[in-house]
Amino acid sequence: MTTLLAAVVADFPRALSSYGEAAGGSVLDVLAARVQAEPFNLVATAIFLLAILHTFVAGKFRHWAHAVEAEHRRALQGRADGSGDEVSFKGQILHFLGEIEAIFGIWVLVLAVAVTLFKGWPTLVGYIGHTVNFTEPMFVVVIMAIASTRPVLRFAEQCLRAVASLGCGSVAAWWLSILILAPILGSFITEPAAMTIAALLLARQFYALKPSARFAYATLGLLFVNISVGGTLTHFAAPPVLMVAGPWKWDLLYMLLHFGWKAVVGITVATLGSYFVFRKEFVALQEARDGRSDEADGGDGRPVPAWVTVVQLGFLAITVYFAHYPALFIGGFLFFLAFTQATAHHQGPLDLKPPLLVGFFLAGLVVHGGLQGWWIEPVLQSLGEFPLFLTSTVLTAFNDNAAITYLATLVPGFTDGLKYMVVAGAVTGGGLTVIANAPNPAGQSILQRFFPDGVSPLGLLAGALGPTVVMAACFLWL
Image (tube, rainbow, N blue to C red; front, side, top):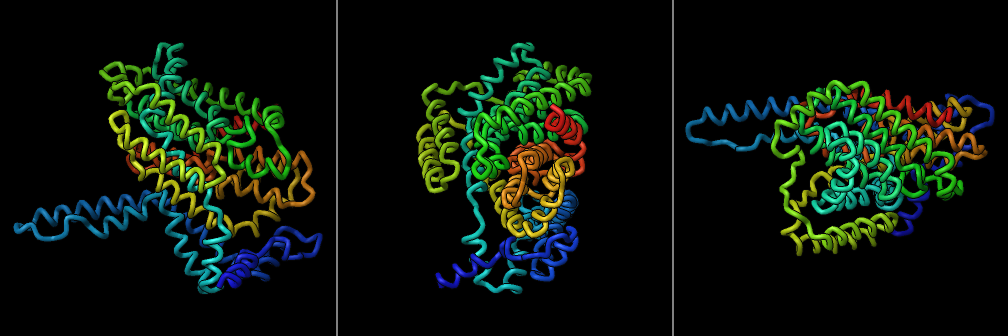
C-alpha cells in the first residue's frame, strides 16, 4: 500500500515539466495540449470555477435559509401540542451552503468524487494525504485563536490607543491608527495575526458605530489591501513572499529596499485618501460614540496582570517562530490552552469556531489550488514585465496569491524584473476578493456580522479597487 501511494503521489497532479509542449506555441495552444494530455485538468478547473461562483451567490443561500427558518417557526407556533422539530434541517443546510468559509470545503467533496471516478481512490488518498500541504491552514487556526484572546487584544489596543491619543482618541484617530499601523505590524507577527488584531479592533472602535454600507465596504477593502502589502517589509511574514524568498534568495534587506518602503508609502497614502473621501461621515460616527458610555471598546474594564500578557505574547512569538513546523506550533497551542484554562479569570471566552472555519476555508482552497498550476504557469511564462504585473494582480483575485508566486518559482528564465513584477502584482491584488490572500477569511469571519446580508464579493471588490490602484502605482513607479 505504501509503495502504491508513493507512486500515486509522484504522478498526481501531473508535473508541469512532463507535458513537453513544442516551443513557439501560443498560450492557448499550450493549454489545449495540456488538456488533451490530461483531460482531468479541465474537470478540476471547472469545479474550482464553480466554487468561486458559489461565493458570489452565498448571500442568496443565507436569504433562503432565513426564509425557511421563519416559515418553520410559524409552523411550530401553529401547532397547539408543540410537536415538531425545533430546528429546521433544511434551514441549517442552506445556512451551511451560505457560509463563505465552508464553500471551498463543500466543493472539495465534489472534487474528491471526480478524482475517485477519473483516477481511483488511492490517487485521492495520496493527493489529500501526502501532496497537499496543510501547514498554512493549521497555522492560521492557531495564530487566530491566540491573537484574539483578551490579554493580547488589550495589549494591542493599549499600544494603538497611545497613537490614537495623538488625535484625542477620536473615531478617526482610531481608524487611521488601526489601518496604518496594524498592517505594518504584520511584517513582524505575520499577516494572519495582524489581520485578526486589526479586525477585532475595528469591530470595537468602528463597525460597532454602524457606519454606512459604502463606508463599511471601503474600510473592509482597505484593510484587506493594506494587510496584503503590509507584510512585505520582511521576507518571512507574507505567504506570497515566503514562497519565493528561498528560491530567489530574497533577504530582509532586499525586501526593505524593493518592497517595504513602497508598501508603507502606499498604505499611508491609500488610508489618508480614504479618510479624505469619508471625512464627513466621521463626524456622525463621532457623535454616535460620544452618545455612548463605553467609548465603543466593548471591554469589561477588568485589568489583565502584566505577567499573563507577557506569557501570551510569548506563545504568540513561539507560534510565529515555528510557523513552518506544525508539530511544534500545535504542541505549543496545547500548552497555550492549558495556560488559558489556568488563568481563566483573566481571559475572555475562547471561541474556536471562527478560527476553525477559516482553517477549513484555507484547507479547501489549497486542495483546489494545487490542481490549477497547469494553466497558471504558462500564462505567467508568456508575459512581459507590465503585463505580468497586471495578470498577477488579476489572477490573485481568483487564487491565493501565495499559489501565484509559488508557481512563478517554477518558471525557468525569470529575470529579476519579472520576479519583482509577479510578487508586486500578487500582493497588490491581495484585497480584491476573500480568496486572494490567506488572512482575508480571518478578517471576514470577524467582521461579517456587521454586514446584514453577509459580505458581498462585489461590495468588497468595489471597496478594494481604490487602494489597489494606489498600491499598484507605488510598486510600479516609485
